[in-house]
Length: 379
Image (cartoon, rainbow, N blue to C red; front, side):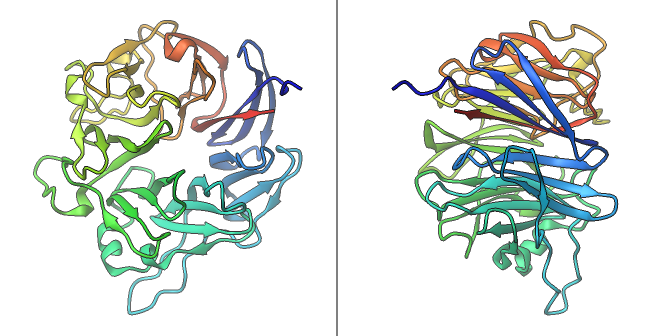
């Protein structure tokens, strides 16, 4: 008996709610389901690949504050987490912290059925072992004096607040975890989060600061290659990098980007089947930090040789006067044999890049500012 044809669902999180776009394997027609949580800030929306039905939404609501919502029927109904991510009461004289919002959601390892991880702003790491119903803090990160120093203050980091993001679970080993902090660097655990080590060798920082000080490192997005988990890619505040294990030093691979574009951006996407292929979406990183498309001409860039060369992909995208950008969670690729790219913009447009970004077309316009885009397959 042949399996049913693959269906796709795009999970779109925005400043004013969430939308689900359902499409077929040809990616030729999309139906919209939403808005969900209209008016609420949704930072991230993730589908559990272990059951194909459970959705978690990281939300910040006017009357409830920061929380997580859970659906077990693909968004038909939602229920708030009984115990959302929250910091423990401070000890040892350290100042109290409160979660402003949950920023990043990652399903746990395939062998750990109901495990999830969450990253927050300000920087915190949390785990759920009951499918997102309740969340507990990981004290080896949240309460560690050294980590607290690396996190800086709540006035440091990105314009919308410092955050912990890019939570990665090695598909070969549930105890092997990684995450990034903006600011505060990339960190790795080999013992399920009981201890951590910085992973910043080879990284550059803003001129005038000391690269040996973890606080000054600002990873924007870190990705592990599905086809080769020993390779990591990173889009950083200071360029594009690659790390091949068992090596420990990141190599800057963005230096071959066009000089008038540069290698500063937010998202990083890796090919599901080819570890040498990855995509970025540059933004203007000049002195005033406009955080818009360079020269108002947005484009994705692809490398097919591990970062040695890059190719511009802009067919179908605006050729002038398009002053938007793409946030770190708002660009992704499906896992079909010939992947398509998807991205959401700060001006509320949802795009598909057919043939690995060679041809761009709108899926939706006039949404609120898009914070995150994920894609999943449904059978």
